[in-house]
View: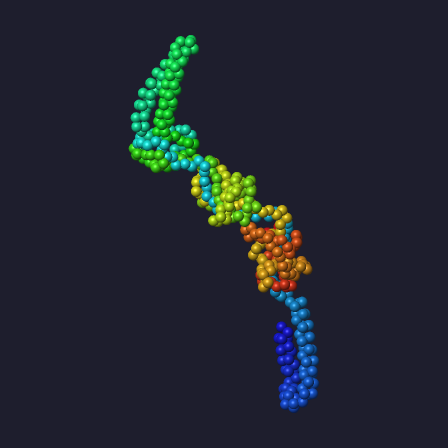
Length: 393
């Protein structure tokens, strides 16, 4: 700006002096007299200063009278203390403790399946039967023998109490009866294994083996039973959060596929850090009254790990950074009506949440900061403010 004014001043000076002055300067330049050259320079410099001062006065007056002068238009917000909650965001899968694939305990033909897929069953309900291979007939015969042994023992016992008979007869009948009773019990337990029962109440999610198939323990999955009430989410948490995650911490659970959100708490925190990925496990229970939440469903967890009751929050978008790596914003100073001066302030920041960031230093409670337009102004520049927000948003 200064160079421009000098150029204009010299041009006006030469124009006012006319062609003769131009010739006299040429004469002085060709004369080679340093004294005359210095004298002429001082004369031109004085003339220049006069014009520069006059131009400055004119510019100042024009600026004062010009109603169309353009001042940057910005918006501002007042920074007030508020409660700030920071969350860790994790991803996990839904599990249930009542989820089981049933296998037979007895080898044989699956002679009967008593339920269908989707059926609601109760704990202890019979689901299927396996051919016992003649064990039932053996049990009938063994039961007859056991009944006879019991009758013999009871009679011998009555006689023994009347001091009739020998002790050896009494002990032999007793041993026979107990042996037969134990054999009956063992065979009953074997036959009980041919009956497949529900270990808990739930839904038959899948019938895996068809009726009439040969099945054997540990090798033939029969059906899948699931209970959708006792659900929980298991996820891995980075070890850096180990001091912030504890039992009963509040958790916000989101199911993106369902568009559903529930609130829960951390039920269990693992005591082992996996050396492979430096994480520990947590469990978060979830209610499932409508039974829409299924095992292995993906869930997003937001766990509150930090709270500041007197936080100063500003939008991250208004923060700039200088060459030294310092973060700064602009605050409003010398406010007069809707006008003010933009003052650059270096700030220290904390945690972020969404599109806001916590301010730890550089700005005080109640400060008015520039929001929209912050990136198009300079330090000390006059600004015009509109749409002032009182609630810091």
